Length: 352
Image (cartoon, rainbow, N blue to C red):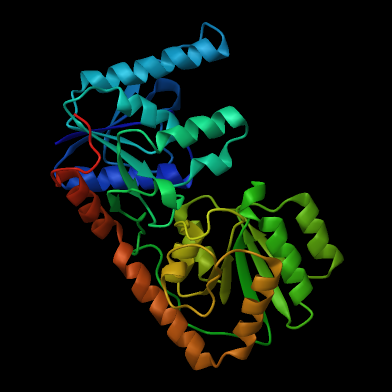
């Protein structure tokens, strides 16, 4: 099959990471797989074996007209490839895929409920409408969308590089507990709330806090004022990230929105042999003692207490169960699952 994936530009986001890896797996499965992307945003941050088609980038008019013209160029380039399958993973590319014609399968791979991320009512509305379009909805978690629009055709999780994210030897030093978090600038990621909770809880246990990716000046000051031992680690590659995870006894991988959605820090921490507290998948699909239904400071404090209270044998079993759970989502396995979605006929909800 000829598979086309339109994107508005490559970036460092988790969604782009999934697409790059997924396109590689589809290429290895024998599909001619193409990214179509504006020429000035066409260098992928994450390596991919898919062919990259660069569409013209219009810059000589107003910002809105430039966007519309460039958007049209992406659509035109997709049409010229005469694909058998088109895959969207963002609300703006969902509209583009919708109008590519009739003689192809149109898949909307939904990795986030984008309505909650819209910065204004127009963006929220445009994202919301896409869930009613006549596209084949594939979600990365069965509970990702609100129940009344959750008529997906398949569930395909994001994948993991299990050759890179490998488990450390389990150990737990309760006298000096090493806790890790992946800090993020975006408010909905909840980094400040996690740091506030850890500061409150630190009276019960001597801790060392490892923070990767991002640490704001305000959070750095809070840690210093409360005399919390901490270390910030800049991350430049997945290798750096894998090494970071393995330095921690416990990873806290929580957020303020989209309970139960797939979350890379959660999955990668599980694969790395850490104890993990999270309100995200894949931990929430297990029987973990440490999973959260939703984030709150009170709920996180209770789970932190459990880390001190549970027998070490229970915590060891928790880590081993986590490793077994993420073994199901190697990129090779996820590629097979998505390939099955592409080749499955007939497709539900598909209009011709």
